[in-house]
Amino acid sequence: MKLVSFIKQTFKEFSKDKVSQLSAAFAYVAIFSIGPVLLILISVIGLIYGDQAAQGQLADKLSGTIGADTAKTLQGVISSSQSSGSGVLALAIGIVGSLLGASAITGQLQTSLNTIFEVVPDPKAGFKRAIYVKLKNVGLIIAGSALVLASLVLSAFIAGLGKKIEDQFGIPAIALESINTVVSLTVFIGLIYALYRIVPDVRIPRKIVMTAALAVAVLFILGKIILGIVIGRNGTAGAYGAAASLITLLLWVYYSGQILYFGAEGVKVYCRTQGIGFNAKRFALKHETFTLDSQNGIGAIIESWHRGYTNTRDKEK
Image (cartoon, rainbow, N blue to C red; front, side):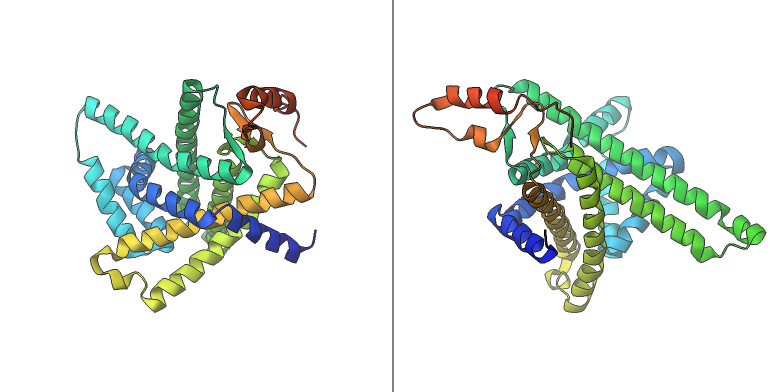
């Protein structure tokens, strides 16, 4: 498949699935869930560094992406959340509330990716699916936080040994910085891979998911540079005065959603042109099985599902 044709078809699917609206919905949900997500990260990182140092570490990471002012605003959100209560009961309630709030982001991602990959919830699953999805989303948040923690610990370890290694082995500091960059990029690619692999209710071959994760990571890096230039030169966010930090965050989250969904559209187009079918996961159905026939009704849907999608546990290609 030629690259130009592939890109054109991907943009066509991008438009057909109304990805701009999906990204807007993702940005809206993310704004209200970003506090719990960051609070979880601070709690996990704080196990090693302490809360104050953890906030500093996270602020440094965020400053390079969304700007120092926006990162400072998010620090204020975290501080307010942390000071909302004390004691064991308050801590337990805070942890549960944060996990549930943070899972709203992955829940919205799942809904959007399911739209792109044309799968819907199995109407027979009901409450079982709701519990399954919520536990999966919470687990993904915890696993992602642990991965970020591992990245920060490794980066701190490399930085701590940097001077000794430079003195004893003559390795320049820029080489150690490059290692840090590679570590951060690897973790980032791993997170994108996990999103595509775990969140949607379809089974996608691992090699295709990894290729998509690499491509999306490159687009994120390019977008980070371009968005920084656009916001910095045009004063896009500055025009909103006191709300500038919120607008900057909204723009970045909206762009992030666009890139994630564009990557998913690319996966769908590639698999379709290569004749690679998607198997629905547990508690999900392919969208075409959900198209009602006026003569056959719901019985035909269930029969079609049993006939066409009993192979969901088949070995991946």
